[in-house]
Length: 348
Ligand SMILES: *Cc1c(COP(=O)(O)O)cnc(C)c1O
Image (cartoon, rainbow, N blue to C red; front, side, top):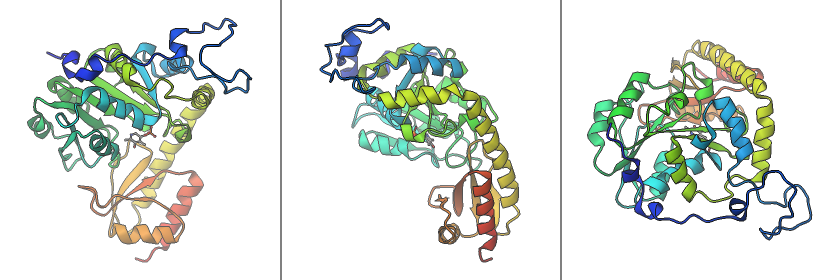
């Protein structure tokens, strides 16, 4: 495979001299030093110091859990930030383009708009799988990124592994697999295949299975070379101290997180079976995520009826291939019971 990472990097990023922070220039090795280098307030309150710009302790915990070497991890202020960094490192505004596959996560389109990058949309097939031929047809010399969201939001399915392999092998740009929902999936993710595919970038998040959407922490896994490039352009203190501390604390109970994921998957199964018995539910799409996409008789109407009963779901009926579809997050057992009760009370 003739993949040349250097050809994909924007010229200004190649020649950029990154900001060197105080904590970059002198790295503490735990020894008690007097720090008079960063103009911080010296009175200790637990947060008066700048955070570690490389998040080394947090990365070592993530590395253990995800089995990805630390030098292949980049962290950011949510997936939103790490996705934006990919655009800013590789896509030349007004010139380059990316490919995304609707119906999918809205941020790829928003970020391409913000960065003035053309977003070439290639619809998923009716089975919600990537259309390899149509994708390769849409590629030109300026196509830098291909976004694969797997498991996909809002459809919930994981893409076929052979299809992803084909795209990884034949697309000469970077393939970004957004694995925000991978912990809920019954198939393995791609984080153990990084060595095989130099053009692979994986993003994951603390916002879903890890139960920490509020701290804003996104993860990116890629080759050490790609991480090095992204590190050149990331804001030095992009992951704040409170977030780093809370994430480390949260990961101490990783078995608790895994148990919650099992509970949510069991609830997903039970909810799916019961929703299917409702007469105005036409279809429930198979889900590898913590939500269900369901097709109803009239999505706008059912959406408003549920609001009237105090339950908010996501109306996805305006998305392509999602006519009359609602996206429902799997809640607690009690919340799901309330949802089913409300659904049963709706007019038929
Ligand atoms: C929820 C979600 C994310 C998470 O974004 P954060 O900024 O990390 O909260 C990323 N990708 C997809 C597809 C999502 O649905």
